[in-house]
Length: 384
Image (cartoon, rainbow, N blue to C red; front, side, top):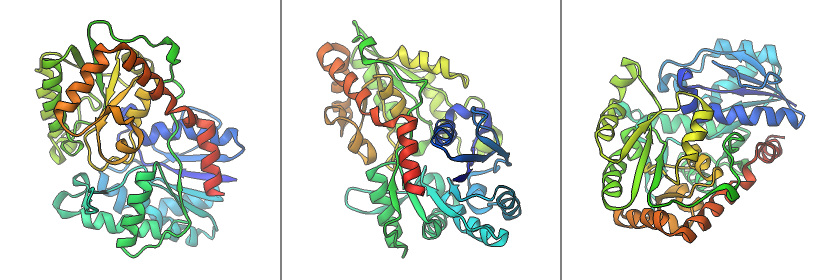
């Protein structure tokens, strides 16, 4: 099977912050191990030289990635690679991929992988557009483009049951019937970020919490910063917050200046340390190994989180708001609805060794089925 894996990299200078690239870097070699011939079309190659590389230009904005698929380049690439399967990691590009296949005279299956959903649903079933994709009221157009992509795909892959439910509901509301083409294929854990629970020791006197999510407004960063101040003030916990972006371009800051604003607030908060792995996975692993628990993002439309899986594979319990995929995946004792509950959970993790070790083992176990080989097998089963 020849697989052409189309990968949009949003920030090639900060690959460690790009979950789609990390996913491909783990999955493409595992697909190769399973017998597939994989070409990753991307601005940067994955680390395994057995995976073929077709260089592409990274879209300059998140909207170009959705509305400017580059038909000429697509047709040329498809004619050159003659794939059996094209993986569209940008669902909105699927109609253009189908048109390019027709123009190139290639009959290939299109598998759309929903790394990102431009919408979410409230507990009462109300569809909400993701504010990150709603600048100048573009959100509805993004949603319709996403639905059009779902309709064209032969297979639709999502990370979780929550994502499957939301995607099915959104498709139905826009007149798209997914039928039997929807598959749940979770992302693989990073093999470099796995630690035996037997090597984990509970906190002694003070715990370190770890927050590794983008500091955009729409990730719920305002609520996190509020909670961070309470935790470090009320319980024996310090927090490490990752600066995922470093120095961003003026264009990106102009589109959304919230990460810089929140970073400045966190830097001046006693008990909070802002750190960076500088794109080095060894340094990232060491930062995780020096922490005791993770904190999930506060983003309402969270269908999956690479950072949550990173923490759990290292045996770090993760606490999080009772919402979206987090409520599906995280142990109930570690979920909270209020900041007061979050503070109580953090304090118990810091002071109750038995409780801590129980959830450290459960965290690790929750990622046991996410090895690249097992995920690749599920992936190939879905796209065959």
